[in-house]
Length: 393
Image (cartoon, rainbow, N blue to C red; front, side, top):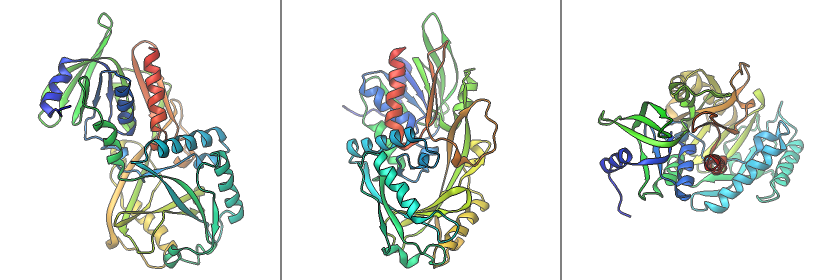
């Protein structure tokens, strides 16, 4: 089908009554757009910025299973996310690959390496042996730049998934597959307001083209809020009540020139907060990070602070034989994780202790679905669940 330019898409958006309007074109909004288009719905996807401009443009490109949940013995989440990871590798082989990782135990104050290896074996068993078998390695190329005073216990080899390209490209691929009539995706288009009409049984949304300033109206039978870190604000804008909200965690990566010996993603054990520190080869650079810092608003989170960079350099210089200086940094990646919690949640805990699972809430009075949390690994499962919820209504 012939591609349509922006003016044609805007005109179609104004003239069409859509089955579903999706607010937010990050990984959740994009994968849902794909799922609904595949099911034959008329779908409008809107984002006030560019596609994947928020959290989805600053991930580590890793497609994790449920390893994070093993520490809390949340076996169901381990199995669910591992299955989602493996389905993505099987079904999206052009975009997602299997990837071996090396887990580097700490020499002092960390987990016993044999206990850690046993945990990786349990993780492998819970994922039905679908990935490569874990193995202990005493020698590997990256040892050349690892500080033996901090990490001299070898490594544990295990397998996860990883995007073949960038996270932005991954999101965009979900969107660009669809260009049929009634399938419209508009970036730089903000939702300024709107209301639900009971007689017509549809939403009327006021939208603004952020590039031209032009205002127009669109209509849809249902709305899905996939605005990520801005989801709570969108719900407030439309007076939608929900039992959930987001708390926000800022994640910063720094990029430095990749060493020749850096062949495989490394996950260093960190004793503080039972955390880890990743060192990921990505094209000509290696990414170090991420941080886990609670922030109150999206505006606080999308700009790295000096403290974030100093924290990452501190951990890098503890673990590498060659010092890493500020002048060695070639890039910064900063994103915010929207973590779903109950509305009355007020605890002050380390963000890593909060679930990365998604939640969705269908409003009881109006055809409006709110989505919370989630991550790349579960995006297809998320899209199917939201689409099924819409179909029932």
